[in-house]
Image 1 (cartoon, rainbow, N blue to C red):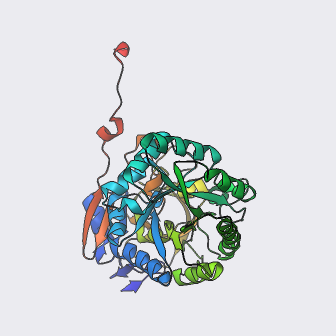
Image 2 (image 1 turned 90 degrees about the horizontal axis):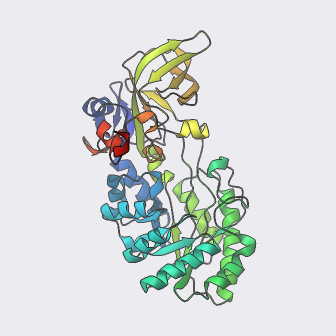
Image 3 (image 1 turned 180 degrees about the horizontal axis):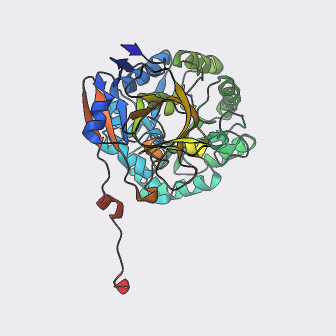
Length: 426
């Protein structure tokens, strides 16, 4: 057995065949077709347990960020570990409920909550709303009043810290749409405390995603801790400090901090601190727990470029096209040939931006070969679409030597469900 890099402990080659836990991935592809997302239950549980253990010395609540991967089986896996959930829509709330999640451990973030979504969350009895604007404060109070309830809230504060990540996933800068600017924080809290149907119980901060350096965390936490102390002096009875998520993973050659290093930094930056720390991990729990399997359809040499045309496309995995992101690509059946060639791995979608990799050195492949796109557990299927009227892929969860389809592949009938042709077009 040949283990892969440290980011993928439950993926290995055995007799030259790539396995997830004890399942040959080719077996999954034969059973379900491709493209297909495949997740390791053991990897999901190990990551959750490792994070919880790292923070075991302090009061904390792990609220998995549902947007990273919202499959019901993934959510159930974390719910069984006692986890809470960070949501950004009523649809995600519905998923958490369907997965058996504890709704009293749900925090609701996001800049554009609707009154209908807030009403659903209030009726569900969630733990906390992370409020991102003064306008949202007013709306939340009005909805809570109509419901005869009091909404527990924290204000999400934008500390104006550069997270040193891709600009599309940087959320803690002054120019970002997220949160209340630090300069307005005290005034915003003073306004919040005067609403009759709001109860201020926390403070929230989230600076971005795929962070591989602890320095931005330290900077943000120091600013947030100073604000926390100011609010306590002003008489606020704060119980929850939501520090967001954003810890990165290894896609290529990144060296993100371990959960132990991350926890030590957080705890040291906040000391002394006796209230509950809320964590919102997403990518760091699921990213390296999943792969996207895709099959080579054709090879095409234009003289300028060699293209490996596969059956997965940007509608299945958007990150490379959207962010220019790197994701490792492995042959499912390892080859002894050491010769490599530089290729673009592209899909069938009619866009020049439809690619999974550009100018990538890969062993020579042939039509019919299976490829595994690694680190696809986060923001893979969750960002998938039906562009070019392509059915979305199946999803599979591996458990030791067994696996189960946890989302069936969409059919053509699924693609037109809900559509009608008006009678005046007859």
